[in-house]
Image (cartoon, rainbow, N blue to C red):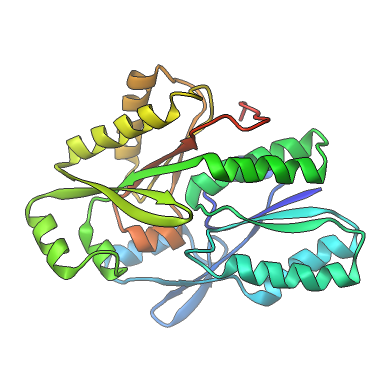
Length: 291
């Protein structure tokens, strides 16, 4: 049984290796040159380009890469589940489904599926990580699918952005909103519902914005406090540590908090300085709380 993710899923190299997870890269375009995310370009290099004012473009994985990877499992009789970046933000899920449907005709006995996580960054990572843990202990394909779909229903993303100009570039706010917001030091609070990013609050000042994020997490996590929490940052590790300390103080939660850098694809949309918290608002039917 193989668990597969794409490069938007910001799990650490250590966790990917520990649970034998395979990663399919999306593509990043900078100055007319195409790179394979996290393979031929690092996240740090993408952020360096952004600091120079370059707005990277991203696209789904090469269809040939998807086909080759899935065909490798199927031809060896290996069941697999692919956890995809949100279909509302990328065409990756649809491309994977088409390839899997073709492979099912050739390998009808192999169990294979693509799951639309309706998520990104560590949120998708937390969903896939539970799948990988379940696969490691020999859980059936069908049960992993069922629990994963529950996880998708319960996943939360709560984050704030430091620089409104990146939301403007991505077409998520108007030029007028960006100018006024920057002048007033407005920090938007966003979450993700049904795979789409939404601005849910506008807070004046960085410190109050971080407090707002932590307060929302406290409210939404209260029915399932004992879990792995993910914090992701867009090249702002200090703020990620600050959020971690605030969560520990607020929730009394001092273990199983993972911090990772937001990858190239989401980072190019959110801009430098974004930070988010990812967790489940309810406990899935089965949950393994060790890293």
